[in-house]
Image (cartoon, rainbow, N blue to C red):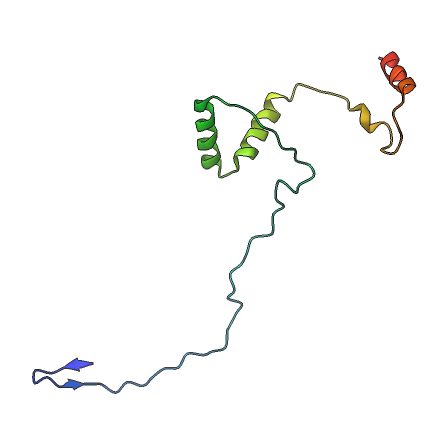
Length: 112
């Protein structure tokens, strides 16, 4: 569009280009793979702890720096700190449907 001094407007004839309505490729936004919510993950257990205010702030900063969830940062730190501790879970030696009787408890403690 060109404006002239006498108040008239001259419009230049330009060929209109039409956009193709056909998509050339999949242009839908790519969503990341669905993550399992920590509350639904059977390998996770909810725990609550009281931390010093300064420690809690450092935890928040560490999570931001690592681009991770605070739970993941705490899990990593505690895993390293507790790596020297080993334990044996006796509940896994018997089947889930098998009742634990007093005699079996006595046998387990006598074996130690």
